[in-house]
Image (tube, rainbow, N blue to C red; front, top):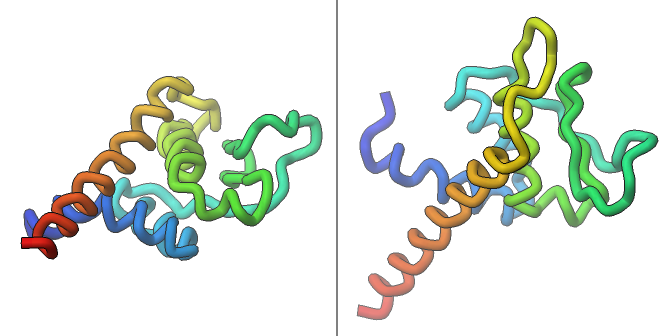
Length: 126
């Protein structure tokens, strides 16, 4: 069972891993934390997707696809698409989360990362 400190640091740690180009490790930790299988990660959007999308999730292949290699390290895109993975029902493989909820999920992680970074900077300065 994770300690309270580990639980409080989970979301900032996930964002840090993605920013540090350790997206696969972040996805492994997310999957373990939420009790789902680790999604596959692929650079390049599936055929038929417009280029204005930075990422997509396919519930049939359980794959997060991103526009390009730089997007692999974008916490908002990765967390947004992981939310779709998390909310896809394994029986019929349909999305069970809205775009708005996926955005909220990603923003929550990023806000906690920003708060932790600000606290660390303040602690360092004092």
